[in-house]
Amino acid sequence: MQPSDADLIGFVLHEARLIDEQRFDEWLDLWAEDARYWMPLEYGQTDRLTHNSLFDDDKLLLRIRVERLKGAKTYSQNPKSRCHHLLQMPVVESRGAAEWQTWAAFHYVETRFDEQTLYAGWSRHTLVVLDGALRIKLKRVDLVNCDAAFGNIQLFM
Image: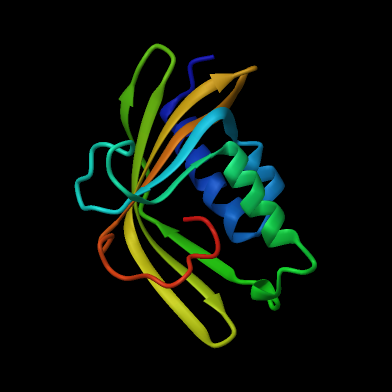
């Protein structure tokens, strides 16, 4: 399968919608088993292994986070946090024989009770085809103010 640009762009938009609609089990299904969700701590950071990161999760950690969000005794999520992604139209940055990369600027709002937090940044998806379907191999989220002091980020950008 060689996905078209429209397929790749549609995938990125669909992923954000699943998060916004809190369809986290479906969202997890979009990830390859060896995938990473990475949010660098420093602007322009190129290496996740030798520098601290805000997030550097494999699929197991993502699954644990999702289970925590669904937990009946997760009091920090009563009421549940909600979020909204506003994406600039994603673009396909590169096409390989078996791997594709997209880029999108975003504004992301996370809310709980009367508190709203706005984040802005750029997301890069490295996508692969597994068993005939697109899957996320790497999602890198670069925040504009990545080096700021943050409270708890409850959901996924």
